[in-house]
Image (cartoon, rainbow, N blue to C red; front, side, top):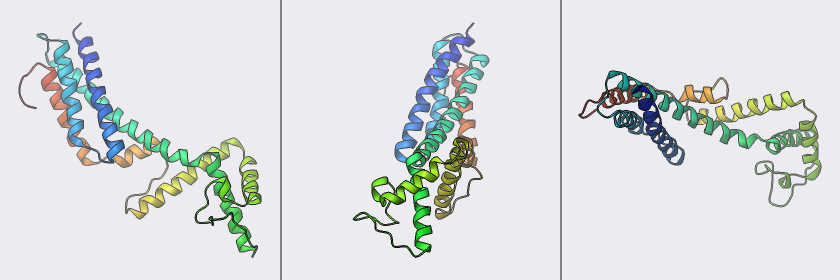
Amino acid sequence: MKIIPAIIAAAVASAVGAVVWVLIRNFTGYELGLVAWGIGVLAGVGAAAATAGKSDGSTGFAAACVAVLAIAGAKYTFATMVYSEVMSDFDDEGMIAWHADDVVMERDAAGERITWPAGYTYETAFEEEHYPADIWQEGESRWNALPRAEREQMKQDVALEAVNYALTMENEDRLDEFTPVAILKSDLSPFDVLWVVLAFASAFKIGSGVVGEA
């Protein structure tokens, strides 16, 4: 069956384009729609090459579907990368520091004097060695006393709060939750529809064996 080689070749070619797209966005911070369009072209070329002389509407449609899936996969992959990068700041040590900050505020409100390690203050402390030993220990005790499920939920809540603060500073819409899917939804725009349509059309045209400009 010609459809299977077409799908495999289109998948391999579009995967290369998707990886390039994710890398470009990850290192530059910009999403280039033309690369998404290029994923469609690559999928079509792959399908046409794998079914040389036998390409038709079915191979074109297969290439087009593969291209759309590759684009969706690339956007989800990037959303997952953003999620993982943010959550890495909220590991156990980060959450202990968060609780240590609470201890600092409580003691400050009670009028207690806090002796900080040289060069550090409440505004600059974020690691164990930045805090007075007793404050860090208290923060660690509070964190470890929480059930595992509660700790994981707190990480999500604190991450969401931090992300929404950053979004507010940039005059962007806040998230209702912090997950890869939520990040993906917030990242979608009308331009995505345009690039997906162009990618689909190009993949279909080239994958069907039609020669010409997309």
